[in-house]
Length: 260
Ligand SMILES: NC(=O)C1=CN([C@@H]2O[C@H](COP(=O)(O)OP(=O)(O)OC[C@H]3O[C@@H](n4cnc5c(N)ncnc54)[C@H](OP(=O)(O)O)[C@@H]3O)[C@@H](O)[C@H]2O)C=CC1
Ligand SMILES: C[C@H](O)[C@@H]1OC(=O)[C@H](O)[C@@H]1O
Image (cartoon, rainbow, N blue to C red; front, side, top):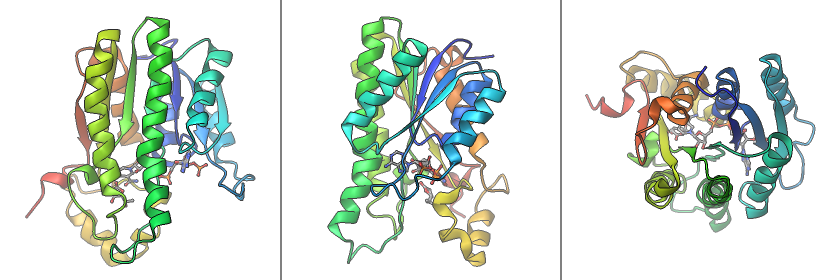
């Protein structure tokens, strides 16, 4: 096991890639605080994804707790750290993963939608990293932060003009905090997933032609699964990556390099 006895926080940890990360960190020996969001009107309050993820982790013999809250609210990051300290005694790993991508055209982008996507994807990452880093600094034993950026930090998307800058921003944030936090032994890296099969893209991929087009562009011949990303996050969070900080790792089956 790579992460025996470590204490982790995973934002957006209930479903998709975040769920994969939460379970893989636990499989590698970590206890996990899972953040999820029930919606501003709590309309998803009865959603059980977070409970299922907690149960999956407990079945692995590790501890898990779920903390509800909008990561765009800085108080939620403070709450996550407090929950990890109360339940596990501290924080060694942060996977800053929560993100949304409601596809929309550029020319009539509503300001409120832009602000929501920036608020969750970029501001939320900033708050989570800042809160976890302060706790890790105070503990004095280092730590590891891995953010979920995207292949979309490097390439554009016509219906993602509000989204791709946030993923470039997360990539840039991890580079800058790697400098700030290196002296405290806190490593900061990002993963850049390509096309991973989760709820975030199920509407976009409901068009069979789009699915086929994308799939044909992936040299490894398949869409990614959350576990493909989760294993890389676990590696970057572990001592196997003890001299890796400020790095970004594409996890895309070769999609990025396949121009023609
Ligand atoms: N899937 C892909 O192809 C790619 C995804 N990514 C990135 O991976 C990350 C995870 O996406 P993915 O797993 O695909 O998407 P999902 O929609 O499957 O999962 C999103 C997760 O984020 C949580 N979440 C959403 N909004 C908030 C919020 N405001 N506060 C806290 N948590 C929130 C959700 O919680 P809840 O269940 O409670 O709603 C859920 O756990 C995102 O940052 C995304 O940008 C990057 C590249 C490719
Ligand atoms: C949601 C998209 O399908 C997905 O998100 C990303 O970051 C990838 O680049 C894909 O566009």
